[in-house]
Image (cartoon, rainbow, N blue to C red; front, top):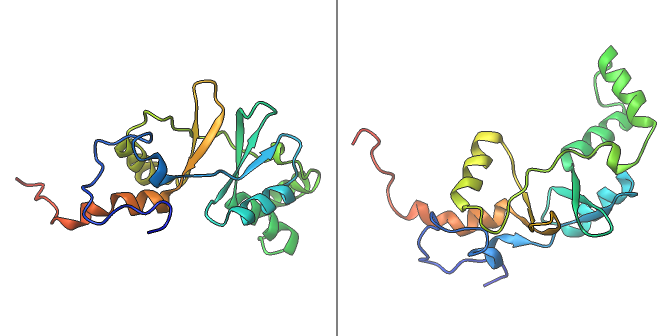
Length: 168
């Protein structure tokens, strides 16, 4: 078994929390300092190999924002000329080319805590089209990332029984 693997036959963790499955679903996050560049974000994500986000943290480790692979690919497309030319995209291109600071392109993070129920995370993945989630402590410091590939691995037991009939 590898780190993050769940033993076969483990019941689905429907009542579990991030804390109770921490070793199975949480990975080391790809982090950046607040003075990092977009290139630094690319390097951090590529070093991780399992994340789709880089997390911008201050000197105390407090999470300030996220840079996603999608954001980085948008910049790749701009620089390669692969995006359609229109007035709005042209203004975005000009704005984007004026800065390479990660903080100028980071998004507000959607965080979870140790007591967040796994079922809540699964709901957010489906309804809000989110993937990986930063785990923060009470002061907002980044402690890890709930990786949805590991979450899928940990919850695959739900497929061991046939789905219930919603009509009763």
